[in-house]
Amino acid sequence: MRLAEHDGKTLLRGHGVATPRGTLLSGEISGEGVLKAQVLEGGRGKRGLVRRVTAAEAPAAAAAIRAALGDPAAPLLLEAAVPMAREVYLALRIDGTAQSIELLCAPEGGVEVEQAGALLRGPLEPEAPGALEDAFAILRPGFPPDLAARLARLAVRLARVMRAEDLELLEINPLAVTPDGKLIACDAKAVRDDSALFRHASPALSAALEAAALTPLERRGRDQGFQLVELEGGTVAMITAGAGLGMLMLDLLADAGCPAACFMDNANGGPAETMPERLALAFEIAARPEVKAVMFFTTLASRGLKARVEALAAALRANPPTKPFFAGIAAGHAALRGYSMEQARAALAEVGVAALHDNPHALVNAVAEAVRKG
View 1 (cartoon, rainbow, N blue to C red):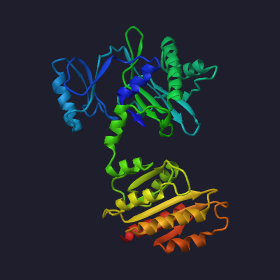
View 2: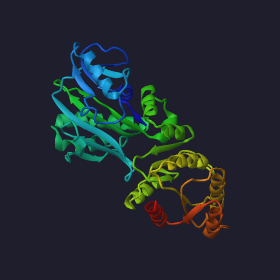
View 3: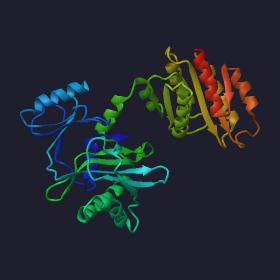
View 4: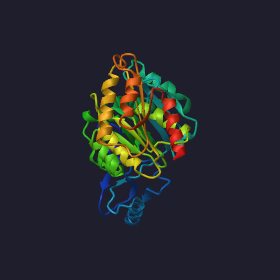
């Protein structure tokens, strides 16, 4: 879950990190400072959604920002301007490969600093005995010793915040270094692990912004226990159960010239999971003229192939697809016990499945051929 800036800064203040004084306003705007739209996507500065204003300029600037957002009552954050002797980019993220926190820092903050190629970076374990020394070693090449030491202390604190708050990303850009040497987080981009949301109260603003950004089908998927993301320009309604598997199939479909029209990540367990619900939404997407086929793919390790095939067949009998339906099931040895892929193909052919493959590349090739034929 991406947190809005206001919610991210509230989180930081709760852990003793300094932020500018600010007020979230939904009505008339008065006062001077920095006026900021609260949106979940980046690039606000380029879009004119962050403006430094005087008291006289604030009402007109607020109206312009809200007009750009298409919402005359959009909440805006008005903060006191912070004097800066220097801007720094400071971020921490979960390195999925190393399964650890990675510290990233640039001596100069600003727009597109992440692409500048001059990032200082390295792993940071906040509870390790030498955490401060590790952070200092990462930061020292870009800063004077005294500033590197203060940044190292802040970095370790932020790494502990990440652990306590189940964050996947915590980015401060800019981090202001004031003339008297204070470090103030002038922005906060925080992303919480969706799997840990049950452990935390959902911030009202972030939840409202997230819900408003969903399409009607995406909202239905969320309410039914799984994540659905609609993708523009897709020609294949794709049904998968896990994020990693879904990303693999997205790439294979794109490489084959038939991009996916949706992405799914199942949040439930159990033998049938949310298969009927996922199929129903995929079929609604498949009803669009630009979508030419439906593709289902899953993997089985110990769960029996027979149970999965029977559940899929039952769902297809109850709700037959209107476009060619291709299935893929990569089953391990234990899953095949007592039930073969040949039996699975025969069972699914009876309910109109065009083909069943156990290899994702073969499945995508079959789907691509059907899409080309229209």
